[in-house]
Length: 89
Image (cartoon, rainbow, N blue to C red; front, side, top):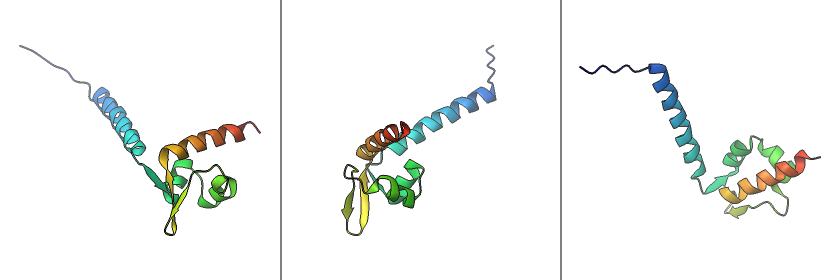
């Protein structure tokens, strides 16, 4: 006879870790961000973004119709460099 014991807490922990990984991957699959997504990703308000870097020459943005769009990868790279540059000051 075979007896199997399963620790529910271990299973739940593994499930939550895997779910977090998948959700993180899903976030990265977006190709374009709009202003709302940029605010979410940067953890900043729209006003703060516009005051700090939105109008900088190197910030990658594209206006289509009346709406701004940012390519996710380019924008992530810009934000990472922007934070590094401003953290030193």
